[in-house]
Length: 343
Image 1: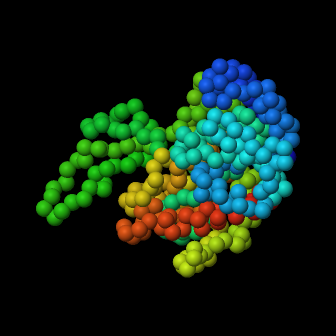
Image 2: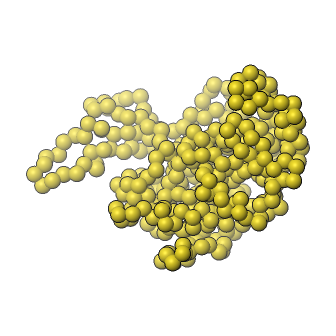
Image 3: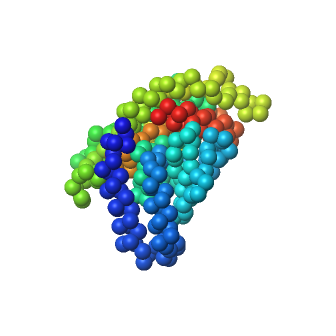
């Protein structure tokens, strides 16, 4: 069904991938010349489509996949290297997959996803990893699957005294004076940092008019993927690291919203702000970038994020991520494996 819906798009993408490689040939030679053999290899890889793309942020999140008996590298084309990215080709739960580690942050995640979609015939993108938890309903170890993602790092920083600036007011703001620390003798003063307004992303959909921008803030995941995610709630998840165990067994939950930005949130005040203003559950540094690229290309997408820490909501003496990083990484991968088996 999905492959048929997007078959015409794949033809365009295949043509574009070859065109990009030809047009950029002179600059490509600076770091990895694309030979006729490599072009043939891309063609051979694509001839075995459709693939499911898997984007994973970091090595510790990739590790469970590489160690899993469920992942089988392709016997002829186990990988393809391009522009600093290592694309692993193989099967996961008997589904053909291309896996790429993006690296940390929105730029890396967006770039890796764009390359994945440009070079290869991919019918859908799955993203998994760890995240901070800003929702007190859930605990470390739980695996969250949001229906919507927003990039909360696109700001208009308002000047003091400005009331009618050129900024949108649809998606709330962060007013710094709300977080001033007062002593009993201090008087209230305006914080010179004033406030920042959250702005929507400018996008250019593949079926739109080039250079005519559209705006989006909350990016939806694929409806079919999100419906399939209903069936994940009984996945058996890890609850202990060595002798350190969680208060209860972790669970898989579909939630309404997740947020991403180039910020590792380890601050209670900002954590509480993200929950109260956006009703978010996971906060991370990549998912919204992957979502935005897929949304513009009309490619089905979903993100699976295991909660590894409280984003600053715990004790100031330690960060839970140092303890539960491996557990959260494994839990997110285990849910991904179950999800892909249901496709």
